[in-house]
Length: 125
Image 1 (cartoon, rainbow, N blue to C red):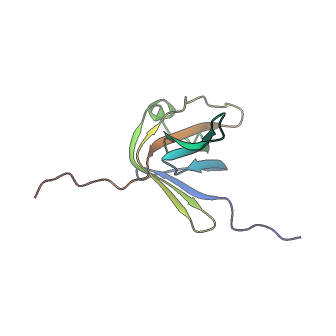
Image 2: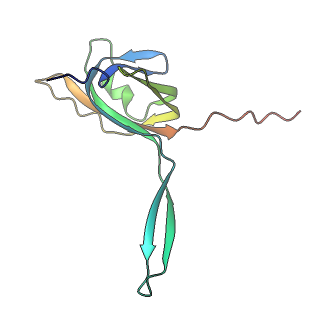
């Protein structure tokens, strides 16, 4: 029996602050959801729906973490490092989950939503 050593979480960095990740993170970098719709005449078409990229998971309530300030916090970048070498990056991220801390485990769920597109330089030349 072999182990899958290429999956799992290494680190979660939000705006330069390292958050103590507990595992079981999910993420999506998709910006569009495509659904195939078929009419009664069997004509198929696509429905494109915009979706928000996100990173969601559980972190520990460390002593230096202000959980109240985490609600609605904005970060330039949130980066999720995986053991397989991937680095998932969400730009202009907002922490949208309620900060409900499990007092027994000392954990809380975070959900960062933002964009996966690079920031545009809007300065005119």
